[in-house]
Amino acid sequence: MSEVVEDAAASEAGPAAVAAEHARKKALAVSAEQPDRFVLGADTVVVCNGSLLGKPESEEQAEEMLRLLSGRTHEVITAVALAFGGTAGPAVFAEDQVRTRVVFRELSDEEIDAYVATGEPMDKAGAYGIQERGALLVDRIDGCYFNVVGLPLSRMWELLRGRGLCDMCGWMNGTGH
Image 1 (tube, rainbow, N blue to C red):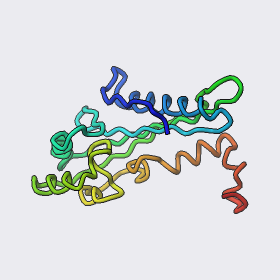
Image 2: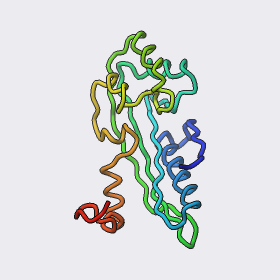
Image 3: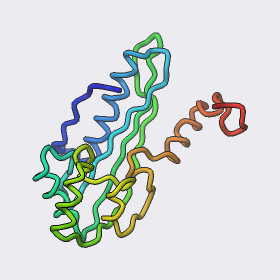
């Protein structure tokens, strides 16, 4: 795990660029410590009405985020970066982004308060986790569910396979782990 500080402030290039930068920094930081291994860095951001929603720093901020998301469509963007240390030092050799549109249902103040009281929103971009109780807040999604969870598995498989990495593990033919 990297110790990269995630700065949720949107750059002039936009929220997708923030996620991409975080993913790159994470991959490179760990790759420097693990030079003989392939390293995956990923970062997920939530964007609603042009605002980048990072991880809430307080219960009040989580409530504000959930009120903003209530009854609206937002976008979840996950950036991934694959790095390898090798003898030349760490370098990113593949990266991509996946976008998923998520529609929240209308939430009452009581629902928001109860959800925040669980503590679940506090370490999640946008203050919810679709894979947990937060699933009850979502009306529908358009795109990759696993992207909203935080790692677009299908796209990761394509990136790895496209560079011959999954063929090496033998997973598809049953010989790998």
